Length: 337
Image (cartoon, rainbow, N blue to C red):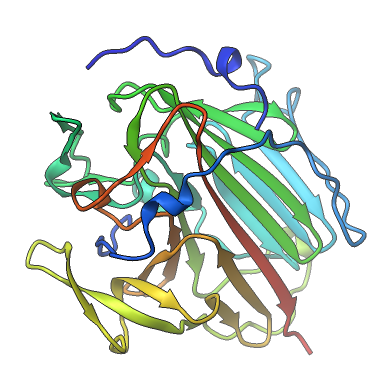
């Protein structure tokens, strides 16, 4: 299906697992995540935080369009790369980088938004309202992580960015992200707006370093942090089939890791801990979480509005005027003595 897509500037009035196992859930109903959206407005930093943004005119931007949003607050600096899929490309707390900042291809670094589908679509195929669709299989034989992670995003204001869904997606719509940063707290809001009915799911894919290095410009570093630990209290995990996609059978309680799996019924938000350095909590209104702990140097904790391959098991339907919304909040505290 080929449709003329209106530009982001014309249509948005201001409002926003890589290598891991991809699977599906059965509860809660996906429709609960479709809600009326309200315009996202810049929000002043709270509790004494100060936000500084870099926009057009930064060095290295010859066409005058911003390549990055640079946010800072006491003790934290963040960079959103508009040219690299609107991803959080760097997140430095107390002088140490928490994210993987480079990788083999766009699915292996930073913290990127997954839109209009999170995780895999089995064989890149799905049916919607009597018609069959095929998506590019960028991780054969499956489609993976949506269509916007390598698209350029545009700044709508100093905290909000947007992009259309691109030519590989057969429906017209756009994604919007809004960011808020303050001391000890980072909030990402993600929105999918449809110009026509479409199946959809959204989420984030952050890659955390197991051993965050010091930032060279910070001078002599303190004691080396301990290796990353994960606290995850999930009521159930989905069993995988031979193709690496989950069945409907739940495993409860989940077995110990390493994991390349999807979890549901979380008892509390996941906690990442670098002993002697930092404790970071990831909270979200998303009901399913893909966790990938296999790599020796990194770890992924991915909130998703619906499970991978939900297009083939019971998709959320997004309608014009009823965007799909999700929020992810990182909070942290120092463990340094």
